[in-house]
Image (cartoon, rainbow, N blue to C red; front, side):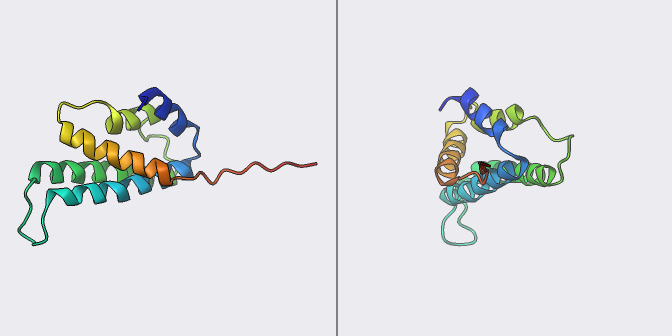
Length: 118
């Protein structure tokens, strides 16, 4: 995955499409987080990574709100993508994020349309 290419793609999206893509990412990340616990309520076997996912969810839900409110104080696009896609010492956390991002991108379609007037 080319980080700079992903940053450029994300930066070219409208605010609404950025919010939609990150929402799809969060859905996929929740799928990934299921690997941290078993079927019972007391069956969490990877608390470190479940907490990691929770922290990412916390940050991104706030960011989605900022996109929708067109808040200029939000983090820059490159900061967001680097937070999600930069290499990590914790390879399990990196895998969780990359798998979720890859699936979100596969299912994402921008709603941008080009209207040709003749």
